[in-house]
Image (tube, rainbow, N blue to C red; front, top):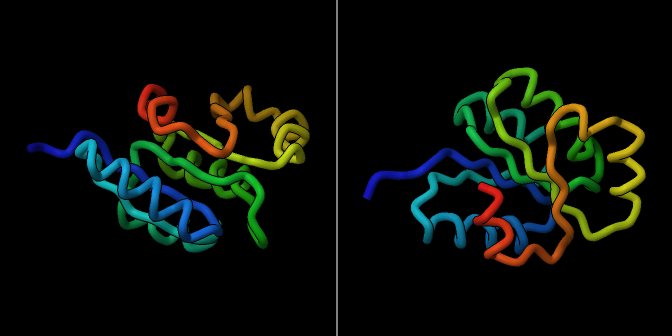
Length: 118
């Protein structure tokens, strides 16, 4: 079976990142994980993701900063932001994420909702 797309999953909660990655691999996606914004950029440079799924609220570099940086490197990369905190909504509004074409999903992400967005 041919792999569908390259997806980078980023979350500082390793369990969430690995669970999402396992789900995506079951559906024939080529998946890499990272557990911080800085690590994600390093992985992206080698992996060249077509889709980025990232938590918004992370220590250090947040998901929005990291996603914007990755999008500048790979303009066609689709970005799905995930967050379980209300502060994420404020960040989305303040940084005009909608203008960048990012999508926001609430944690916990239902597998069907995630797969539908891909």
